Length: 233
Image (cartoon, rainbow, N blue to C red; front, side, top):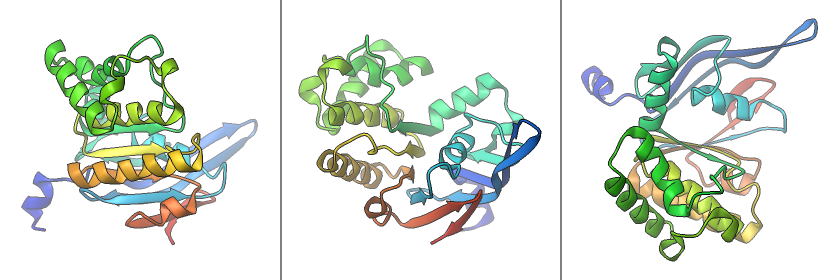
């Protein structure tokens, strides 16, 4: 790619020499140690590692939900360390989608309202946001469940609503933290297949933290976080 082309279509998510240190009593504990990572458009990347290795911390740093001790994070070409909180929020809303092990849906709202929420936060008209949310729920196989609240849905259905919410803004990258970890094997497999289908159809980059090797092996790249250091497997 030419330099001009690279500038016009920057990496959805990129970090340089990322460090995250926590203070524990008298000690400084380095959880993330000089991580470099770049996701291209449509990339599918898995991050694996032992429990407590810092995988979720890294994902939070890449999503602008936590601040690094040093290093840079770029989302859609913008260094988020130079942005104010409101600017970060707008950038996350536009460029990123988040899927977690636990769906984090708002229990008082319907599936349709939950999926429409990111568009409403963005300032889109209610009718347009509702139409887009309905289309996305149809895409994830929940056309008949739009008026159901999370408590009326199965675990797999709730996770599909969460995926619809993450994708409805047409983000450049999905950051997923153990997205199938709270599901039985059959449901987990179905949800993961749906993520891959939507990645292929929408061209959205996919960065998944997972402990499931069989899922990781379906990705383009598998990286391991070990003692704060990220390396290719």
